[in-house]
Amino acid sequence: MYVTSFTFSETRAVSMLATLYVVRMLGLFMVLPLIAIYSADMTGATPFLLGLAVGAYGLTQAALQIPMGWLSDRVDRRWVIVFGLCLLLAGSLVAAYSTSIWGVIAGRFLQGAGAIASATMALVADYTRVEQRAKASAIIGGSIAIAFGLALVLGPTFANFGGLQAVFAVTALLALAGILVVGLLPKPDRQAAKARDEADGFHRSRLAEVLSIKSLNTMYVSIFFLHFLLMAVFVVVPSGLEAEASIARERHALAYLGALVLSLPGIYFLIQGRRYLSEPTRTLLLCLFVLLSGLVAMSLGGFIGTLLGLLLFFTGFTALEAMLPSLASIYAPAASRGTAMGVFASSQFIGVFFGGMLGGALLDQAGVMGVWLGMSALTLVWAAVLGVSHLASPDSVKVA
Image (cartoon, rainbow, N blue to C red; front, side, top):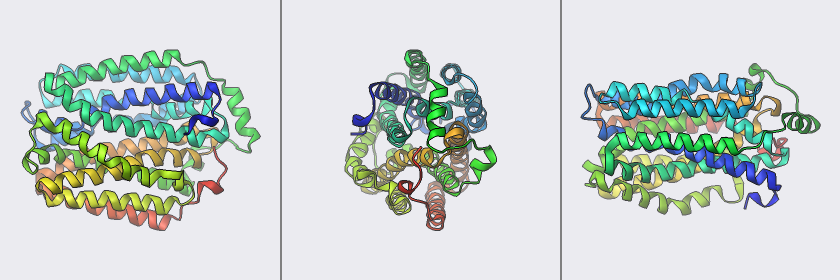
């Protein structure tokens, strides 16, 4: 329903960029439900190092998003994206041929060096008119959610045929597919995009000014918390499916698929009518309530508690994953969107790194229940931040 008011060129560009996002994030997400159980017997593996392997790519992503976003504001963004995909390809091959947990960690760090999220989101803005960017960003956010869902099903499926190495090999192939998609993109008219922005009343902003925008800061904090929770939770979810729900790892794909399909009505309810544009704080808090309910249910354990918790967690997470990039792109100053989205992406991947690392540390020191209690407490802190943020309605902000 979003593409009906796009021009043909906008529809083509947004569709291709959404495909690029699916291809890239699919590769990064596929190992998420696998590392904690398939790497447990690798040389040197410990709960902490398994958590580090889950979130390692987030550190290099976070460190390079702002520089890559800055660079993409000055050169052809497509070349920045191709370079990032080449690094994803190289990291996937390193991890695929590793026999120790340290090799997997090194590959994940190298995968993360392909930090192209900010450049890709800025490229979306180059291809679209000002009034269509909220819709375009929502589609991109939705594509990430689609990639997440597909990855949880395809990752365990590929692993059944060749273990973790097979999944990393598929990720390398997906990186190549992403390069082909970029090659089909037309060269954006950056001057025309800049003229549209300036005609709509936007002015160039420095990084310090981007960081001073209250609504944007709330988006940075929110995406940090969201991916922190995701990584920490998946340090314990795969083993929980085996130990608590008595589901063999060969059938994990079916468990994830069932939870994702059943979560669709809830996701639709949360994002329908794009009401998060008129009531952002209330809608985000509702999503957090659903997510927290999932954490509590999974902490109770058992077959019903684990699967119900997974369903609720997926519902809240997927809705937030679709909303937050859209909101951030609207709040961001147009002339500095690459930089602003670089900060947003950096916040996301800092959350990825610390979520995986601290999730593993909690598991090592406090056990599974320590992870559930820690993540529940973090969700309540996030809710408190949103409660005092008083987000402006994007409907009252100049749409960018």
